[in-house]
Image (cartoon, rainbow, N blue to C red; front, top):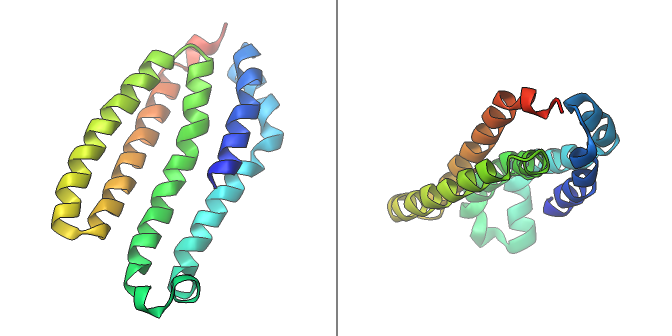
Length: 153
């Protein structure tokens, strides 16, 4: 899933950087939007099929890990959104804000993983991943919405 989103982000960054409005930037990347959408669909498929995939792929004795896989697949969805959003904001001159968000996220992740994995094991660590990816997605969306006028060069 990371390959799909990485390809989308890498290919769209130069077009976004050269665009002078959000509308122009969107017109450049719209045709490739299927890449992150395919990654999101794959994550949703993993969530739904995990009870069947885990026993087949790694054996029935790992059936207890289905919940962890489902949470991690859900956590990947905001992560899929985060990469192109971060690239978009960086390409429009908001790289410092993106760096601050990512730095704060690392601190939050370390605390949550330490606390939640200590309390709930692998499920807690997966929940920490979901929360931190959700935090980054929310922060990037808020920054993008607040700085939209700034992109009207």
